[in-house]
Image (cartoon, rainbow, N blue to C red; front, top):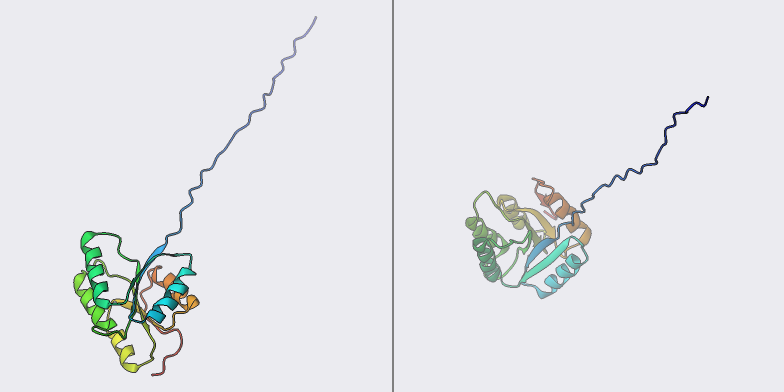
Length: 171
C-alpha cells in the first residue's frame, strides 16, 4: 500500500518594496542690492555669486529707481525679492529714508527682509538703525561671505532679533 505523502511546494516569492523619495530643490533666494557705489556693488555681487543659495540678483545704483521697482513688484504681485541689501549712505535719499518710504507701501502682513550695509561705525547710524523696524541686520562693508551666510540663515529661520555689525562697532 502506498501512502501518499502530502507535500507542500514552496514557490519563492519576491516582494518588492519601493520607496518613493521626493527631493525638494533647495530654494534660491533672490537679492536686490541698492548701493550708489560701483565698487561696493561689484564686491557684494562677487560674494553673492559664491553662495549656492543665491539665485537672481537685482542691482540699483539709484535708490529712487529701486523704490519704483519695489512698488511695481508689490502692485503686480510678481515675485518680490527675498532680501534687500541696502546701503545707508546714498545721495538724494539715504537708506533710512528709503526704508521709511517702503514701510509706507506695505501693511503689517508683509514686510520685506532688509539687511543694511555701512562703511562706518557711526553712533548716529547705530541709533537710527535701532529705531527703524524693517531691517533686522546691520552689516559692515565690504560684505563678508561667512557673516552674510550666518545672518541669511538666521533671517530665513524666522529669527526676531536685531543684529548690529558682526564686529564690535566703535561707539
